[in-house]
Image (cartoon, rainbow, N blue to C red; front, side, top):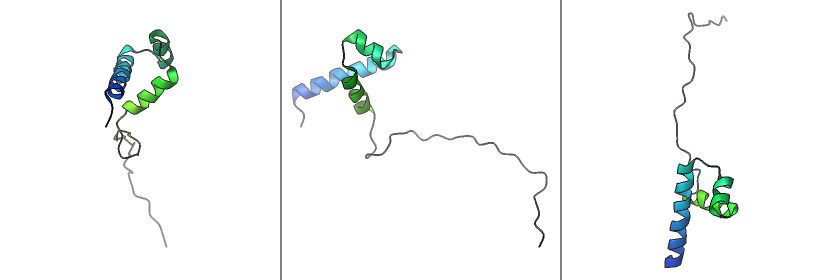
Amino acid sequence: MKTQFAQNRAARWMAHVQQWRESGLGKTRYCRENGLALSTFRYWITKSRPSSGGESAAIPALVALPFTFASKAPSIGL
């Protein structure tokens, strides 16, 4: 069980992550302007991503592939 201190710290960092995402600034600049350690900020960005059992949290996407119909199927003679 997390202590109150740990919960407050996590909430404070998650708020910074959300503000950074909305700001449009780069990580380095956001940290410099807010007096944050870049390495710690990167840690909390990673922690803010949803996990899926240790695997990558990539979102599946459909990708359109080019397709053309052949006017005549190729034939093979034996």
